[in-house]
Image (cartoon, rainbow over all chains, first blue to last red; front, side, top):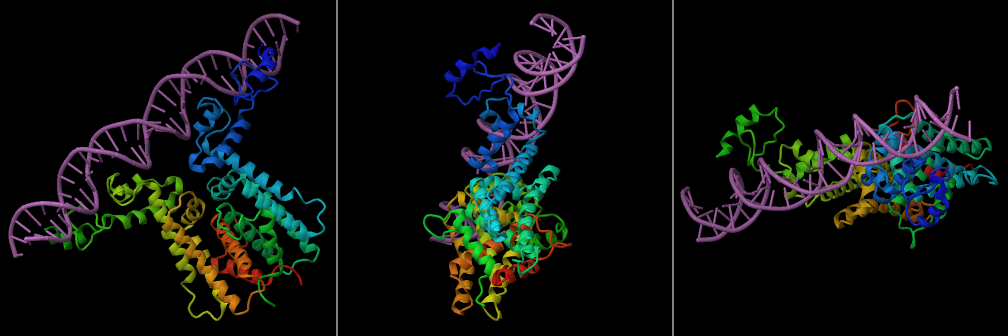
Length: 223
Length: 223
DNA sequence: TGTACATCAGTGAACGCGCGTTCACTGATGTAC
DNA sequence: TGTACATCAGTGAACGCGCGTTCACTGATGTAC
C-alpha cells in the first residue's frame, strides 16, 4: 500500500512540484495523477499567461506536470478542446467577477458600476486568457463555450434591465448595453495592452472604471 | 535582354500569379523579384486575415510568392520584424482611416464621429491585423511601430482638443479621450468577434458608431 | 474480508510535419571608366 | 557605347527543433461476488 508513505512524502517532497492527494500520494511519482484534468487546465492557463498563446503547447503543459505527452489525450480530445475548456472556464470566471460584489448595492447604477469593475479586474488578472476568450472563440462552436459566453453577457443585460425598471435609463436596454459593454470591453483591452497612460503609476481598475462610469452616465458633451 | 519579351509575357502568362514589372519582366520566372518587400507584406497580411496569426509563416508567404524560404531574409531580419512592419503599416492605415473623411465636417463633434466610423471600418476590414496591432505590439519595442501607434492616438487626441477649444466638452480632453477611445475600441473588438447581435443583418460601422456617438455625447442616464 | 477481473489513466516510443533560420552559391543590376 | 566589377537579391539544400497525435502497452483502481 502506497498510502502508508503519505506522511513522510508530504514532508520530504513538499518542495517538489508534485501535488499529493489523500487517496493516492506515494513515493516520488504516481502512476495515476488523480486530478490531471484540473491540473492541465491550471498549468495551461499559467503557461498561457506567461508565454502568450504561441507559447502554449500540450507537450509543455504535460512536461510541467511531469506527465507523458500522450496523457492529456485521456482528458481532452485535442489541443483545441483544451483551449475551449480554458475559454469556457474564463467566461464563467468573468461572469462571477461581475456578479461577485453585487450584494448591498444601492441601485442599478451602482450595480452596473461594480460589474464594470469586476470585468476590468478580471481582464487585468488574466490578460492572455481574456484575449483568448474573445479573439479565438468564434472559430470553434463548442456549445458549452457559447453558453458560458452568453451567460456572461446575460449578467450585464440583467443589470441593465434592472436599471431600466428603476427608470434610470434615458435609452433602450439594447442601446445602453452596446455603449456600456463597448466602453468597458475597450477599456479592458487598452488596459491589458498597456495603452492607457492616464497617470503614473497606471490607474487601477476601480479608478478607470469610475471615470468611464461617470462619463457614460452623463455624457461627455456640454448641454 | 529579357525585356524584349515583356509584351508576350504579359499576355501569355497573365493568368499565372507572377507579377511583371517594366524593368524586369521575363520568361516565366524572374531571378530578381523586384518588389519583394512590398509583396511579402501584402501576402503576409492576406495570409494573416485568412488563417489568423497561427497560420502565418514566413515559408508560406514565400511559397505564395514563388520564392525560396531564404528570400524574405533579404528584407526582414526575422519573422518578428515582418510582423512588426505589418503592425506599423496597420497603425498608419488606421490613422489614415480616421482622418480620411475629416474634410468638410461642420464641427468637432462631427469630426469625432467620422473618425470613429473610420476606426470601426478599419477594424472590420482588417480584423486579424487589428488584433495583431493591439495584442502583440507591447512585446517588442520597435521605435517605428511605437511611433505609428502614438501617431494614431494623436489623431484622436487632436480632434478632441478641437472639440475642447470649441467649448463642446463637459470634461477634460483626457477623460473624454479615455471614454471615447474605450468605447470605439471595444465596439471594434465586439464587431470583429461578431458578438454584436443588435440586428439582423449585422449593423454596419456607421450605424454602430452613430449609436455610440449619441450615447457618449449625451450619456445613458436620465437627467 | 478476499479475490478476479473489467475499466481507467497513465507510459514511452514513434510518426511525420512545417517551421525559422543559415549558408555557400549564383544570376542580375547598376556604376565607374 | 562598351566593358569590368562590386553589390544586390535571389537560390536550394540543409540544420535542428518542438509540435500534435497515435498506439500498443501496463500499472492502479474499483467493483461484483
